[in-house]
Image 1 (cartoon, rainbow, N blue to C red):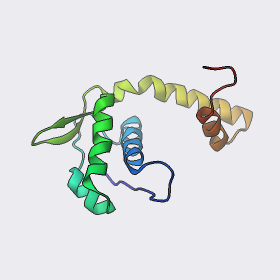
Image 2: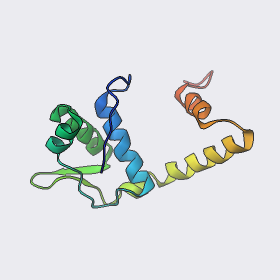
Image 3: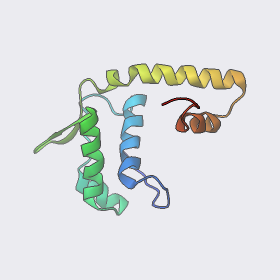
Length: 120
């Protein structure tokens, strides 16, 4: 898996990495049981501290998306693709509705990022 980070982004590096893994699982590019690259390898390739990569992996572990196994590293859990299936279907419905309304996805993303008025 090829990771990319944008050091100038306001999003922390570990969150950028975790988001890429989530998207790869959602798209099927990272199937259940797939082993992620070692944190040291990713850190060296991206020129970031390996602890940044470990932070991303630990965040994904806390979500139940990956397992961290001593000696085996980070492995995509058996139920990870099912975990996001409902979300993937909902997102496709949102994309379809945005197309119907003529809204660009960037506007939809901003709407998702902003809480609705009156929502708690």
